[in-house]
Image (tube, rainbow, N blue to C red; front, side, top):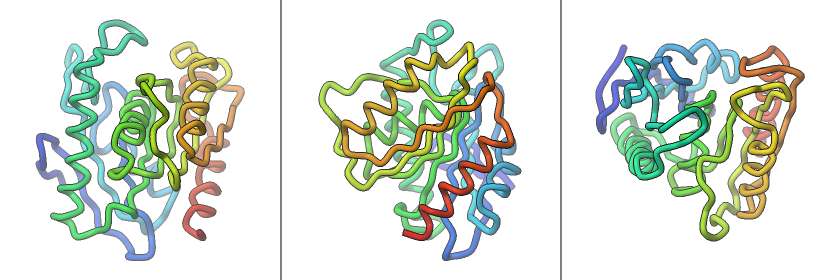
Amino acid sequence: MSDVLSGYTYRWEPGDDDKPVLLLLHGTGGDENDLVPLGDLLAPGAAILSPRGNVSENGAPRFFRRLAEGVFDMPDLHARTAQLAEFIRESAGKHEFDVSRVVAVGFSNGANIAASVMLAQPGSLQRGILFRAMVPFEPPQPAQLAGSRVFLGQGRTDPMMPPASAERLAGIFREGGASVTLAWQPAGHVLTRADVELAKEWLKDDDSR
């Protein structure tokens, strides 16, 4: 079932109180249903909060605009980052969950907007499983990320997300005080079984803290 909140069409599925709320953020061309099976694999019984990107690129939903492949529209990125952070807060109020339970699970464009929210507004999002992410923006000074945790699932042969950008993203998170797991796969711009299994174990460890 889809709903509308803060400018997003989204899917909400309640879950167990002792499980996280998974914020599912699809890649370019996806929608609010794309990553639901992934969420079920990562954390059975978790609540699902899955918005559809509200920017269109030739009919393909995205979470922010870009000027070219790998070149982001920075004013739009910052505006959409603030909007997504507000969506998280409003969703917590409407669906009665604590923001601290939210774990972003993003792929590609969805991973990039999740990284942007974590860096710009860590009070809205402190945990993320980011698959095939790159640096969304360079903070002018280290972000205040103490207590934040992030899993970066990257592909060594990914033509869209350069390894150097993934390494730099991990560095930005670490400079802010976040705990970072950077896991490489011999793969391109696709999810692998190993990506999912490693992220699932990371999430189990996160839940046990």
